[in-house]
Image (cartoon, rainbow, N blue to C red; front, side):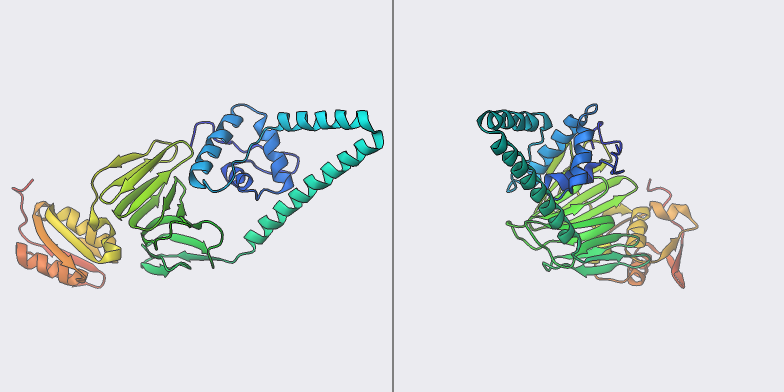
Length: 336
């Protein structure tokens, strides 16, 4: 996010102003008290600048929604002029107009509050994984293979213009195409917007990495954005620019596809990919073994079969004990 991110200003109702509240306001879902808190917050420091940056990102993300213009001074100036004009014509008529204005404003606020409550009444589904992966089918028939120690939350049904989910950890998304209803993933570090594609998302400890297998993906924050195509990846730390590269490693989502392609890869990296995809530990007492290099491809092969084939190829001994594999042999000390 930008350097002038809201610090958490409270009004007399103890409402904290942050980016989530601003998003609610831009979507027309803020309550009257929240709108009042935002008004107070905009009057301090560089908060107006931060609001305008978030609004620019909002317009990019939701182009079909009208832009919200927030200018308290101009609004009061307009009301003051109306009051002056009306008071000259007829004092009674003047107060009728003021009352009507207040009623309309209150009705709009109540409507916004009602819509906010209605939106929050939609049941949410949360999936949290621990030691195993889990495949989830979303309301639009998109799927997510959620890796271990990850979480996904989404509504029981997608409504409105977008399909939106919240995610942390690692997951492989296969999104059904629908240009009229973009699919948006909210993570701690940034947001990811797609129409229909397959890509891997890793959001852990303030670091986000997105690898695109097919289709196009937009990664964006309040201050930066980047389009990715098949074969490209992006990474960023919280509050920092997005870094993109034109390479991907398909083995990173082997946990989801069960497909691995190793082209002259050190066994240290091979073992790391296997441990990530399967709930096993690989012990290698002789560190020289990790220097051996492997060229092979595996498609829906179990971890046990993969390691046995690697052992036969490189003359290594594989011993299995519960969820641990112990690999022994001479190794390849010359292959640095």
